[in-house]
Picture (cartoon, rainbow, N blue to C red):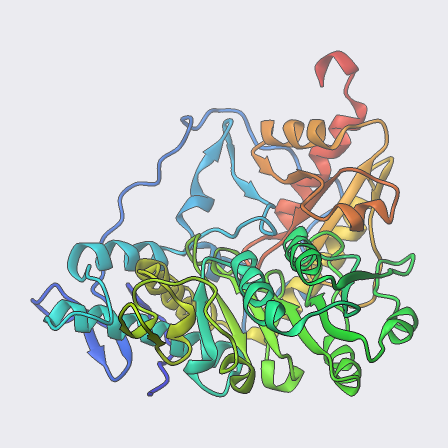
Length: 477
């Protein structure tokens, strides 16, 4: 299968012009080409007012290293319509990227063009539009394989997101391979979606879930991890980047050590894929999962990579259409992987949007983006240190731009509400990672999470608003 180009940029689905006069997608090899569709004005919840946004913190501003060669955040911002709206009379400052990222116009236009010109079910239609939709869907699979460094598109299973991917592995591979006395090692920093599925399957198979502790800095305790590994270990579940602490564990080294004991390794890449390049073959991961909506793509679409020799052994988790070869009341034969694990009609438009998102995202110099985000995070930590009573959780040496913090005398939900008045969106709560917060004796915290389109000026607005909160009389809060 031809691998699609995921580097070019342009209107619609980047780098590929629409088929002139036809109004339907052009298909080149396995790469679907969507026509463009104009987008209207971006809606706002309130008209712009004369009130100015919060003033920048005195002395704060962009550092020279925030403009590395080959990348400027403005080159990304101009493609994101929602970043040009106002909230409560202020320009939107979107610092909730860990929950979901905003979508470039190329993704929005690709969805409209698909539904306006190419909507059809896939894999089982003889007509032209069914063939075109199928080619677009499989082009998306090829793009994901290339993006993750997988050996083949057939190593990629489409799912609703990371949560469904992990549940699929637990219910298909786990049910067949876990038994009484087996250990599933799960890092304490994991999202609930990488804890609860293992608890459920462990209860069913009489295996046990064993937490891997953290160091005071919020890194995985590698000595404790090595001590916990044994012949009983069947699986290690670890995030490539923490959604609360930003920690980036040494996944490659952890995987190599687990493999010495014959254990498989599942990597939750939900927070990682938007921040640095991933090569699943270099990691030697047995499973790797991510969600499209944290990668500038639509909600409800994600992907699971699995090594082909493992994927071949996995029985269906769900049954129905699209995953069979033949059915009668005496015997059913299943389709080959990956289709065997994709029962029913898939999220076709979601795959079209994911393909457009990958085209857009990979058009930027990934190393330059990573350097920019690293510099922006350093700037943000320095700027936040000027806020009285603010403490950022976690100080692991390798981390993504996630800043979870507490503010003396302030409830995290109240902090988020205050910032929202200034048009600044952050997240507050337990972040679906209660064990990680419990490591710091907390039940909730506030979180600002950055992406390639955020700027040092937005960080300044965050800091200024937080300083105003600390100085404000209680009756004003």
